[in-house]
Image (cartoon, rainbow, N blue to C red; front, side, top):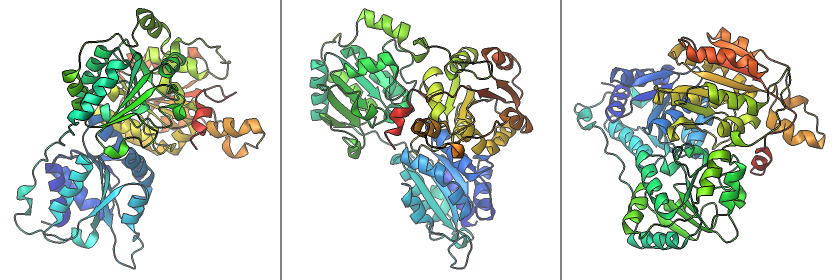
Length: 546
């Protein structure tokens, strides 16, 4: 058996059941070995799409995914998706063939490339050690929640593996949760018992069923309101005390209540400039607490009054065990009424700016929220439009929203929806894109159609890079470089085998309702020509982070 086959079989045996990629000569045998061993291979049309699909699959499923790429250009094509995953601490294994010959056109310093974007690296070096080196790379991805590039030199892949190397290629144990100290638990109990207006803000580290249930119980005891960062949106969807998202997408009522809190506890949440609006959501007298199983994350983005190193679920349950009597905290009957009646963006009155030629993106988003099934998984690309689907489309839980925005690249949204759809085949996948990101990633429309995904792709089409238009336009700068003539994106989608509709008014959405009620035998693209007179409400805040 060759190294390529042994590594592929070992990784599959260790639990990697989905591998995404584009196959070339350097990763051909490795990828086929994984398929033969039982892994599902998802062929993308571009390595950048493959990396983002794998990232989204890992986020939504909770399992480590792999992306398989050719040496050199296969890796560089995937680099933006790998960067997003690395910045998001997605447990992802990048399997890259590597050319080491000095005269090879494919030769680059792949390890340095990975380090430059925040990934960690490993290499298969010998036939005897190949399987254990591959398993060690997977172990680090899973246990340290890191994106790991495993380089597989071509000359090593072709070596014969000694007999018996695969005998220990068994599934890996799960990562052990970090236990908080008794002193930290006692400190957190004291802080909670003195708070009058506590708010919990949960992030990526709280996106498990166990963590959610523990936080709901703890919030009930101390009367805390509940919010999430964008990547954890939907975690508290069923609670009447949910504020939905904290940060730039927060509704006016949520903003008011966050700013009025005397205690903010971040649970597995970085409390970064986006989630806290550069600190403006933290009142001048509020105490800030952060709970994270990575001690380096505590206080990394802002000063905190108390830092607790510990797994979110374990910490919350320990506090429940140690805590005393319950408190009313922030919760009042009139507040519950307010949250029910005006807690969501769709409940906030607005003047519809639509015309016969262009639909208001708020009107579009509210209508789609009513038309599309509630059991959905929503993926959002980057751009001026992104606040509308993020704030107006409801999601059933934390696995109903996939938000690949750590690198703020446009063009990732469609691949994100594909990866999330494969992780949750029981839900309707909804990809929400700007026209720039849609056209940048249009090649993956073929992947949607080829996989038979019953996906809805919604394009908020303002015929521009809208963020730049609304950022620079008011100062009188020329905008020819960021505006484009009208494109029939619906026709492009039909060429890939989609059903498609162009929407200019609410009445044009009837075919969407018909598609939902029909057999959904082909995916659907909605080319919505949206109004473009001004930027979205969150745009000015977003540009402060550039």
